[in-house]
Length: 54
Image (cartoon, rainbow, N blue to C red; front, top):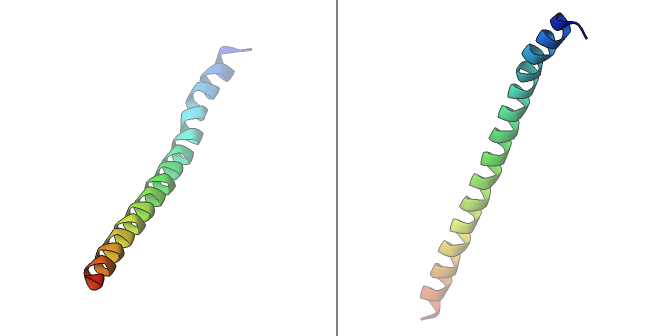
């Protein structure tokens, strides 16, 4: 392999992988936030039902 090809690969790989990793990070953190909100709503609903029962 010529050195120009190796340099091109070294430069291109982060340029391609960074946006993909960033989008994956955004999706994962969004999913975790949705799960945390859902858990909080379930706890609030359970507390409200327990209070209504007595």
